[in-house]
Length: 374
Image (cartoon, rainbow, N blue to C red; front, side, top):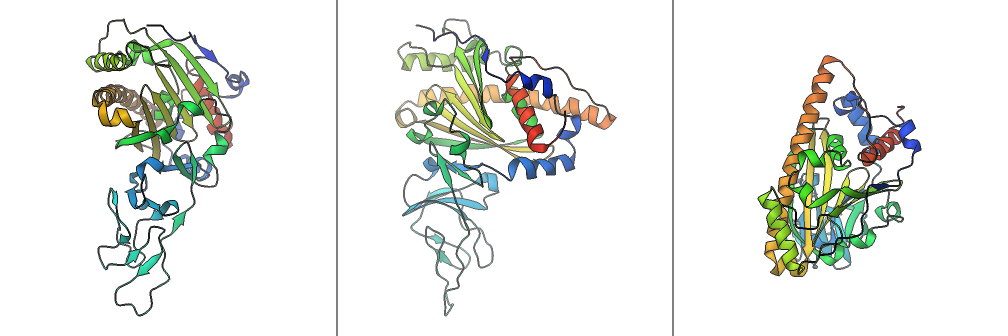
């Protein structure tokens, strides 16, 4: 087995960020006014990730979106994919549940019927069909992922150098999970965007990836962290990661993957994750200062998803192990900061560079968007 080229802690972070950026104040994790300002300054401007083409690959396919409390639905119409309201224009009943395929959209309450573009086709016993189409939201696409809002993800990612590693449109959706998290959304991203904790908190992961072999890359509204991979011979402490490693190497005939993993982000809240034979989209939806919904979508190459279930099962077990460890970290961060918040105290520790370069970039971006001084 030949190890990939050593990356060895490379980072292109603008050195001036270290002089102008400081960790965010404790209030930013609990104060409702700060939270409302975030919604206006960070989230209302987009790009807003809504789903993927792979959720509705065929004409007639639909999938309701948990991130919107099912109020929106992706529908594949004859001319393409639409993001429609999922409530009937008559008495606002929910139209569709989950995922399926229908030639039309029919309200189960009074049989109002819409076409796949949202146009009302018929309303029983009305002499004239009301002019009541379902509201539709314009969409833009990047590598099979669909976005709404005034900003286009494709424009924000135009200079993203790893586009070819994230070809979601050549994969198929395996499943979606929804996690409700009792902590602030920024705590989640701070852990996602630093490598300082990997040695201490991820015993299985840190024997698969190489925490000392990484590269940071940064753009205006994105960043990535590429981790190298161990040679596969180091003793594992995690049965899940042992199975994951053995399964990957068996499928590749012993050849190591291009990376151990790549974690990227499109601000403010869309995490794009690369793993061997898997791509993940993880989207954070802030509900309140101390409540965050995380919607996680798993995509695999069609031949792996259909015929190599051992890879899918092993990856998801390893992923779940690391996700549970991250949740423990976020919970401890929230508890510690909440204790300071209730005591009326402030504290800001120093950054480690390059281990925490992603967090530095995040904090600087948030401050600039919020127009908040350091």
